[in-house]
Image (cartoon, rainbow, N blue to C red; front, side, top):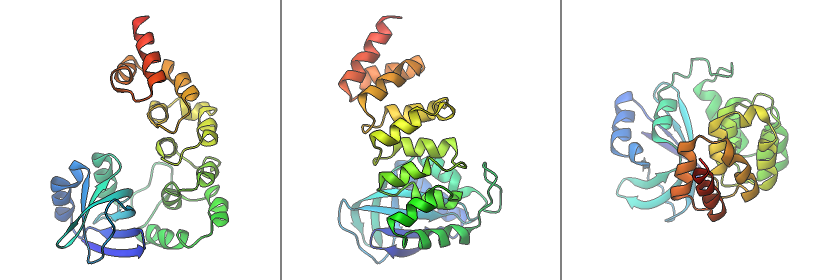
Length: 240
């Protein structure tokens, strides 16, 4: 694995072979972890942004938490679905993406380096017209205004909206824009992302609840952390 520190809180790591990627997945990624092979250090519990590159040019942008120091690197706990991360890394960068955009590895790397140097105003202006590789980076920005600007991008895909809905930087305004767009709310992934995000206002979550399959309502009734939502789920099940 080739690792480069590109800012105080961001690293780029490239797998050099399919075998190396598969071994890392078997040992760590499948468990929601990552061994970042580097001489650099990072404080315990610090949040890092990681750009992973697969051997064929596939890429995945992750948010990770430092959980320990290793003799040859840093131990991280990563956000995201391990299987989806592996699928992204195994993609051939020469293949066409679902929204009709073609991305090369250098394009993604250049976007990462360029966007991290932009001012917040420049990020807001870019978000409404950004290409997919740029959007993947902007989706991780901690400024909710950037998320709002991304939602105005006509090329934004449903899977990207689901990532916005999951964001720890979600605000009332961001959730409201998503909720009012029928083309996005028709996606179960988007609705589930919103209802499981603790940043989603309770009133919005209660509006989403009746649209969910019974299995998801049961899951909320059994293990939900929002008491009002949990009680509403229980009442809904009792009415059936």
